[in-house]
Amino acid sequence: MLLGSAGIYAAGVDDGRTAVTWTETVHLAGPLPRALTAAVIAPVMHLMLRFALYRVGRDAARRRL
Image 1 (tube, helix red, strand yellow):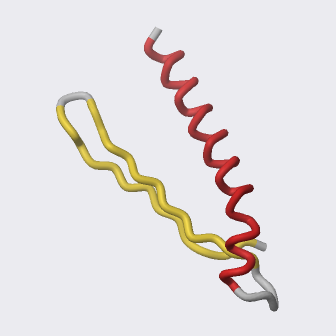
Image 2 (cartoon, helix red, strand yellow):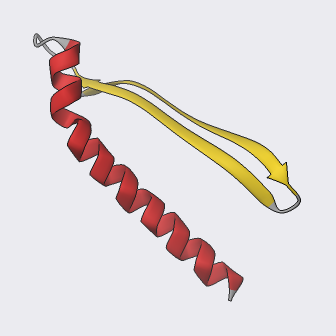
């Protein structure tokens, strides 16, 4: 089971543009130290985030057509 927190923060930059910041602090539940499990799952979380952002970008590009 994953434990931790996540946040998405958006702020207007100018007309029609928004800056978005995504934060995650994630670790595995269980007897192992939080820092160890966070380091082990960090590469997997990074790949999941890249894939999610790819899909968001693809969907946004489709809507602009």
